[in-house]
Every structure is written in structure tokens, then in C-alpha cells.
Image (cartoon, rainbow, N blue to C red; front, side, top):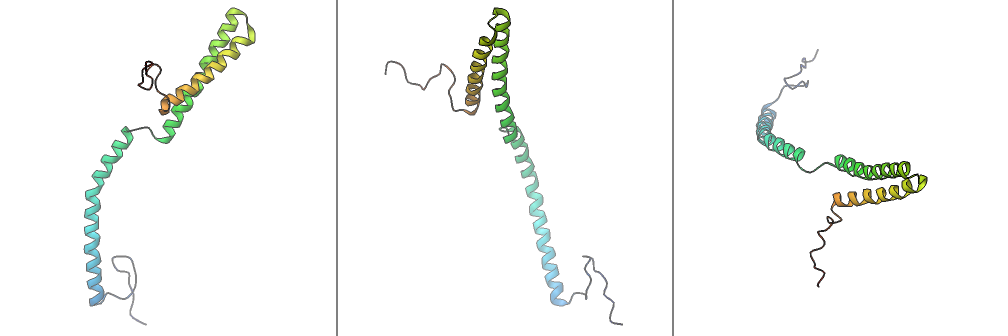
Length: 131
């Protein structure tokens, strides 16, 4: 039979390394160790950035949940107030309709404020009425 091929320390089977192959293997091992050291030096930096990311601005899902809950809360509060006014005043559909529409508008206004598209009430654009 031919010479037996056994797996080496890398798990590959085949003929043993020759002189030139051994030099390439040593060079690859050296480069792999340098890369490992460079990666080990960068790992703490990435962990710090990850912690900063978690404590920073809200992620996309969190922002979407916040905006949708503000919108739904405005509608729910408007509908609840309208229903309560209808029960107390006896004006059956009109309080609910009016306050549901007001709640819808308030929900949209809250979302726009959260996104930063509308300034807070009373702060204006910085111009006075005398201009």
C-alpha cells in the first residue's frame, strides 16, 4: 500500500508539509496571531459602543411603538371624554363624534411634536408679532 495519510493538527489529511509549505504555514500562523491580537484589542471598543448605542436614542421599533401609542392614546382619550359627556349631557352621538375628531387631531399633533416637525405650543418661530 501507499504511504498512509493521517490528518494533521488542522484536521486535514494529506502528505506532510514540505520546506516551502512549512514556511507558508508558519507565515499564516504568524499573521493569524497578529489578527487575533488586533481583534482582541478592538473587542472592548465595540462593547463600549454597544453600551452607548443601547443608552442612546430609541431604536426603530421603540420609536414606532412610542409614536403609535401616542396616536392611539389621543384617540382613546378623545373618545372617552366624548362618551362621558354624552352620558352626562344626554347628547348621545354628538359628544362622542366631536371629541373623537378632537382626539384624532390631538394624536396627530402629539406624533408631529415627538418627531420634531412641530414646535411646542407658545414657543413660535422666534419672530414677534410686531415684525
